[in-house]
Image (cartoon, rainbow, N blue to C red):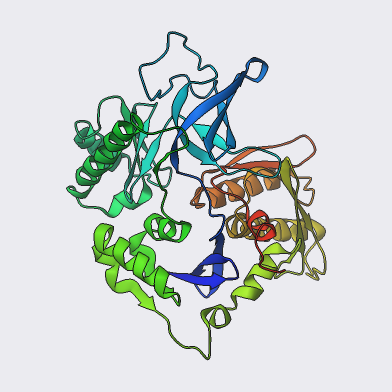
Length: 399
């Protein structure tokens, strides 16, 4: 069972997921500079760069975002579309922030708007009904897809989230109708708003965390911040009344939540490059500008088995811990794992299957691509927000 802990840390709100006696996920959301992901704006095209097939769009107080013309083939103009198929400087578009700015990279914008609910995500720019990879019941998916065809608005698509598996037959069409009403309202508002206007505000990260967790596995939501308690209470009353009784305001001043669950220690551990394994082996995790490299080492392993079995044991244990660390640290993009070399093809296949199985359990789409010729395992993990080390670096957490 999971317990969601929401507390204050310097200038940020810290969300921590407590699973089976340990912290399994950490997230920091700055109050002064919260994530912009999910916000929808009226933007103005500043310039178009043909050699990279992209436009740069101003969308908030002089902030410029990257808008791919390869990814965005259809554009949401605030007025009647101009004669040219490609946006030109001065055109006003409806855009959504897809990724926050990272280091020298501008925020990524998209015209394929998405509207997430607890059970579904209504999308623009792509039709059809898709399902979370976590849902494997083919018969259930087939029946649901047939039942939802009429509920999906024309010209839109739908993603059915993992949470939908526990929803009633009435809840999904009701949610889709609410999301469609929101979509229409935003498109209508855009017609009379000036450039830079915010059309929709994404919920704070800690409210999104409540929404995205599987209700059946959520035991408790606890916070010691009255303001967050009120926000969570209002959200639950409106959207998840069945989970209202799980919310608790913690008020013990002698033992703060951060101390009760050793959150400072968990944060510091999640920022360390070296992670020890129970066997005595260890990982070295090195994030770089382009990718993350994880090195597996034998360390202090003192097993009495032969070398082949020793390496197999450490690698399999390392795979489990790497899966945990990817979620805990919110690593994303390309991840290269340098496992200890194994001579047997059978052992390499076993390790690949093990890592694939672990990645399937990740709440974020994570894929084992291949084992390279240099015996490096390549994994990709979808980027949804900044990794933990980036958010900590940009906050006053350890200043």
